[in-house]
Amino acid sequence: MAERQQFLARMLTELRGGLIVSCQAPPGDPLCDTDILARMAIAAWRGGAVGIRANGPDSIRAIRQAVPLPLIGLYKDGETGVYITPTIEHAHAVIAAGADIVALDGTQRPRPNGEQLATIIAAVHAEADKLVMADVSTLDEGLAAQAAGADFVSTTLSGYTPYSPQIEGPDLELVQALAARLRTPVIAEGRIRAPSDARAARRAGGFAVVVGAAITRPEWITAQFVDGLRR
Image 1: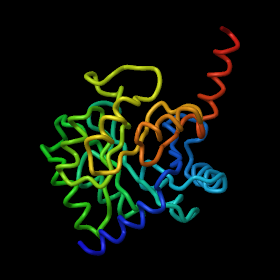
Image 2: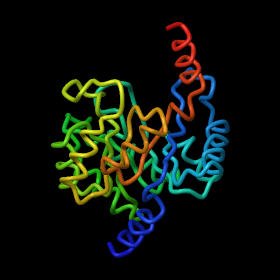
Image 3: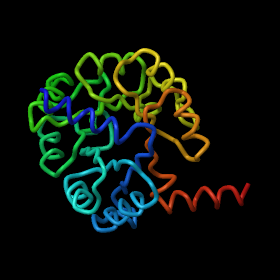
Image 4: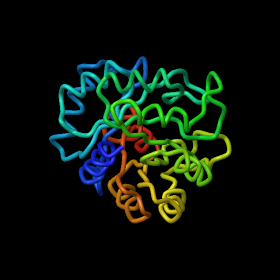
């Protein structure tokens, strides 16, 4: 317990106020390759990122070897429902690959095998004193995640559950509401597409900010410019 608290204090110091880059690529993307994703993480590190978020044991392992930054790992299994590190088994795989923080679905939706959020968080804490980031979509889910023992709460899933706001930009209202109610650090993530969005997320109370596609998805970035020209 004391060791985990010391590790948490170090992670808080290293992540506070900084940019975390999500180095991921979905299946079929030209950049969906562990070596490419590791190089992407190196580029983010050189650019000033304070942390990396990565998906899947292979990518986590490659990035762990490539950069010294705090590494937030997750394990996507499927595309619907609870698919971000849904079970204890997935969490164990993320830890074994070298993640410092395990990101998992922190919503109140049913999990596979009837597993409970608090049980998975306790298992992560027990295994090598690792930390947990709960990805949520509403204030109530954030409060429940804190009560379950999450070390960080992120707004990643706002807009990805049918009962959360379906908006174009980042859910700054959720960031602000969570920051006002939680003792747990709130990580702003989701549809942050410009430096101005990142600044707004920090002003809303985000402890740190995660940016993914706007930095690491050239296919998506190109499409935005193409769409702008067509308009």
